[in-house]
Amino acid sequence: MKKLAITAAVAVGLSLAAGAASAQTVVLVRHAEKADASRDPVLSEAGVRRAGELDATFGDHGPELVLVSPFQRTFLTAGPTIDAFDSEMKVVALDQGVDAHVAAVVTEVRSRPRDALVLVVGHSNTVPLIARALGVEAADMPECEYDRMTRIDLNEAAPTVHVTRYGAPADC
Image (cartoon, rainbow, N blue to C red; front, top):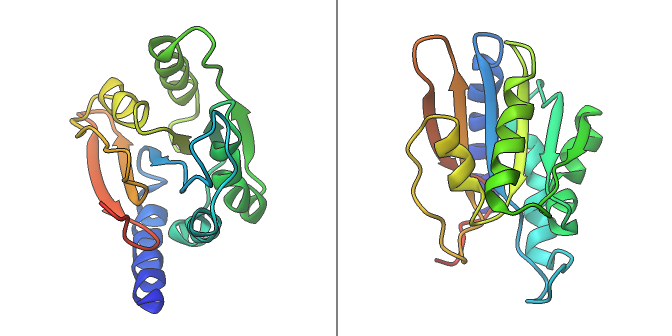
């Protein structure tokens, strides 16, 4: 089963790398599994495994920028990808509320060059809102869902979206 998940991740990575030069590309994921229900938990063992699989989804072309929230579970999820590609990481504040956070993420994404590849690691309540703010339909995310990966290509005509899964299937 693990081999299948890694093979799928590599296939997704090839598609991510192939489209990166033609349009600004944003990849949205929720942080990996949490160790507990505290306010700012670390990742569980399953979360650490998932975080370690995220970089493989990008193939040879990783994100130039990774946007995270101030919660450690987001930058712990992004860490292996940041290390693998020497990506810039930027923390986007949440202290002004979710709407301001979403607006700040969208502003940061849109300020990047046309051929940029940006990874956003968010939360179950922010990932769908960010996708919608970028102009695509996105389903709400249940609390148990950790494996959704949303790729949005922001081209001149209209954004296109591709939703896939990465790592082990979530227990939803």
